[in-house]
Image 1: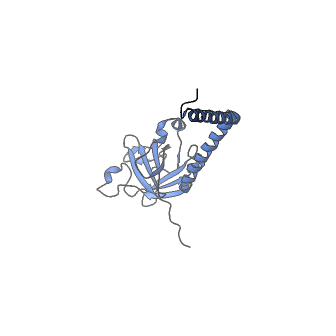
Image 2: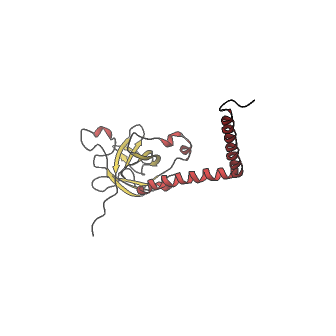
Image 3: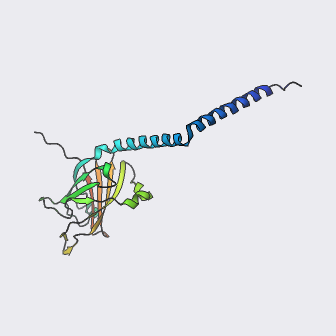
Length: 202
């Protein structure tokens, strides 16, 4: 008995699909697990390289004043005087080992609470979702570090030298950096907006 109309076409399409599937599977078998792993590694390296290129512009020295200089927004700072400035030396390519240093000064140039204080990475944080924290909008990458108040630092009548500080660094679209310092439950709190200093004309 002859095939019903269309049955031959359907069978040929099914055979073609099976042949195509066998071909793909054969290619995958030939490529092997090692080959797939190599491709995955290459893709991961490409993504990492792209991420690094986005961060290259944040390597260097950044300076800026504390936020909260006027009476209307002074509530956002604690412990720091309104004339405090911060100088950050930062390298995102070494963020997991030696990110950089920070120094705070008052208007007369005197060092206040941090004197070339090292930013220290927190290794276990790299394995936690908190390492990928972010604020809304405008940020390329954010980090959490720890640092330490310089020895001999005084706040009011209290010695706070040697106390640990948590430092939040946000790399902003456009090339600026936001840096937040927290010591204790508000003993020190400061938000600094930093930019690369302009080169002076010779």
